[in-house]
Image (cartoon, rainbow, N blue to C red; front, side):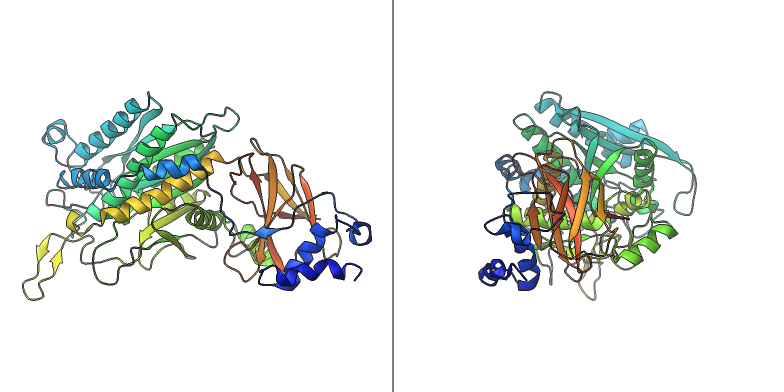
Amino acid sequence: MACQENSAPAGSSGFGNCSRLAAALLFALALGPGAALCRPQEAAQEHLPPPRLASDKHVDAHVAEAIRQVSADHIRQTIEKLVSFQTRSTISAQDDESIKAGKGIGAAREWIKAEFERYSKACGGCLEVKTDSFTERPGERIPKPTEITNVYAVLRGSDPKQADRIVLVTGHYDSRNSDILNTTDLAPGANDDGSGTAVSLECARVLSQEAREKKFPATIIFLTVAGEEQGLNGSKHFAEMAKQQGWKLEAALNNDIVGGNIGPGQDAGVVRVFSEGLPAAASEADIKRIRTLGRESDSTSRELARYIADVGRSYDAGVKPLLIFRLDRFLRGGDHYSFNQQGFAAVRFTEFREDFNRQHQNIRQDNASGIQYGDLAKFVDFDYVAHVARLNAATLAALASAPGPPANVKMLTKNLENDTTLTWEPSAGAAAYEVVWRSTSAADWEYVQPVGSGTRATLSVSKDNEIFGVRAVDASGHRSLPVIPEPER
Ligand SMILES: [Zn+2]
């Protein structure tokens, strides 16, 4: 080894795996004194800094300020208002009289719409408030044709070249009690999913205010869907619309049961983030390729989850994401799955420990045990919901501030060699690119190598031993989602 002396600093660098980092340093240091001796033949990049730990933070002061504006008190008002509609069952009343009386899903829908419009007025009309309505055919949980309405607000991206890139946050505003077909008795749904609806609304409020000062190049959508309890009907319709219209939807953050239920065993310091491994939309051929390449833990949803972990390290949201490498909890489903089915990256946020006596239950007290059943607002920890809203808002803002992920990322595998050469196409808004990598057995990215503004890099790290990704960064350091390279022969 001609460059042995160059690998010496690795031992004192604080990195865990000397041999792997030594290889990376060899690459970087190859460009210093004595470079001619050890420079890989294919190395196209020059004057590169040494690799960093991938856990390095990036903080945008505007985003940090925006998430400070999230208000637990405002979230409490939102959830209490949603509970006041008595039931938000998707098949409950939505006629004019019920809306006027403030009862049923129609009244909830009109209030959410008015709330988005109020936020828009406060930011000089920066939000486009929209509805996505359709008639659902009768089914097991829908006795007769039923109009279902998703309500959403669009904060249009400021860069014409990037405004077609979309990130979204969602929660479901419908609720249920013990009987899925009951349309009249109380179904407060404070936690499930008044909490998630409040997160989407609060993100809309603070980020629309922030947009007066800071430009978000990409578009952010704040969504609230109905029909979740009946069978994910609302999100299914919305995700299908996004797919049919060819939306460049990069991320969907689904918040469902993020109330931080007050009770034994709760951990208010974390929020679970569920992400699928094998993509729901993968074809047989896709699965074969995933198996061959060892990419079982690299779906776009999983990369999104890792991005949220990165945001969680960078910003003080008050709650840390706890990544769960699984689509959802046992016996349960959620709206993120509707997006996964259409091939979009989507994850689910849910509190650490759920209380099943308080979900999907009629309000009642059991005399013998003293247990209070029902999804009441008094069991919601509003500070916790605010923390989860901060993590969501920071993630949306970070993604919408970042350049688009690089396209057509390739890893050259023409020859047997121990180096790794990656190529990609430039992305709008990018000032530079970074290669991230981790051991095949590591859960999260470990190292990052800045590779300048070109579209090709060679690292002296073996593609056989590591998993690589390429991400774009702008001049201020905002990071895109990483893209896993496709092998090219
Ligand atoms: Zn739910």
